[in-house]
Each structure stands twice: as C-alpha cells, then as structure tokens.
Length: 207
Image 1 (tube, rainbow, N blue to C red):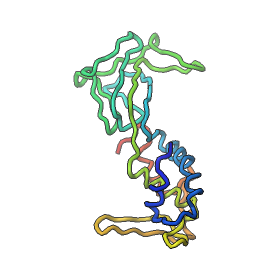
Image 2 (tube, one colour):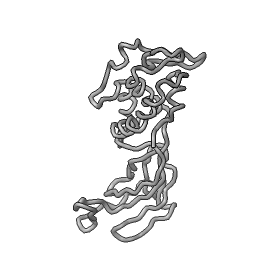
Image 3 (spheres, one colour):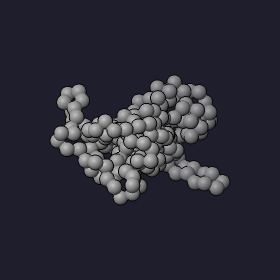
Image 4 (spheres, rainbow, N blue to C red):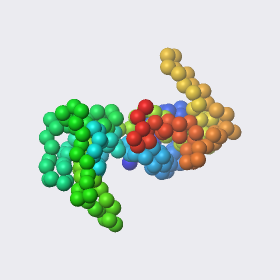
C-alpha cells in the first residue's frame, strides 16, 4: 500500500493538470517501498509479530507508533502477560516491563528458539497493531516523486522544480529550478532532502 495517494501528491506539488497522473500512480508503490527500506520500517497500519531477547528494562518494537498490544508471551515458560505487567510508549514503540525498574527476563541458551533456516529468535513474542504515515514521510514522498517526474507539471501545465522550502503563516513555498530537480541525490537513490527526513526514522533511533 502506498504512503500517499495521487491526490496527496498532486496537492502537495500544486499540480492541477492530469498530464502526469499515470506516471505518478506508477511511482507511488515503488517509491513507498524505497522509503520504507531506507527507514528500516513500515509506515502503513498492520498487525506485527516480533521476537525479542529481553534482558533490558525496555523492548524496542520495530514498528511505531503503536496502536495497541495484542499479546506479550514468554515463550520459555508459555506465560501470557496481562496488561498490568507492561506499559507501551505508543509514539516510540518502547515496551516497558512493570513494576518500574524491572527488566524483561533475558534469553538463555535453553530459551533460544529457531525459525526457518535455523534463525535464532528470543523468548519474548509480542503481537501488536502499529503504523501510520507521518506528515514528514508524505513530504519525503513529495520530494522523491517530484524529482522522478521531471519535477512535476505545474498548475499551468509547465514544469516546476521540487519543493525546497515552505513556511507557515500566510503559507509560502519555494521550488528549485527545473534543471536542479535531480540535484542532491543520496547514496540510497533518494533526494538528499528526503533521505534527511528518513534518518530519524531508522529502527531504534528516536529523535
């Protein structure tokens, strides 16, 4: 599922013509996948099952913000924790063991489990609902698609450079010249401004 719709992209880039619609639609899913790969996480809503080793006061869930915790199970003992045994910081995905100051029991050699291809996994299994598309991720979509669609069609049907700055209060924005639309590309292939946005979303990084 794409991280933005055709109407999101066109509204953000100020495009009113339909000339580039087919190209934008064709780019939404692959650009969404590229952004999620660069961030090391998914942003659309869904149900996730993870295994963690424990041993620390918190478990860092890979997908966030967390909408709800379905279950937390100690696979070494088979015990399913109740909601009063833990607390989750929904915006960051940090799962804390209660009482305060206590730690998640660590995995030991006898607690190591294996999945396909003999990949070891930890003792704590967490099933949860998570995901949303933050506004700055949609902005990263705009930056990237704008650079790939030859800077996008302007409302007058011409070409305009990518959005390079914007401000609140009597909203204003600035676009780069068409010739600079693809400038500043990061190692990942994303525009540098989009890559900068994603840096704070990489798994385990909280800013």
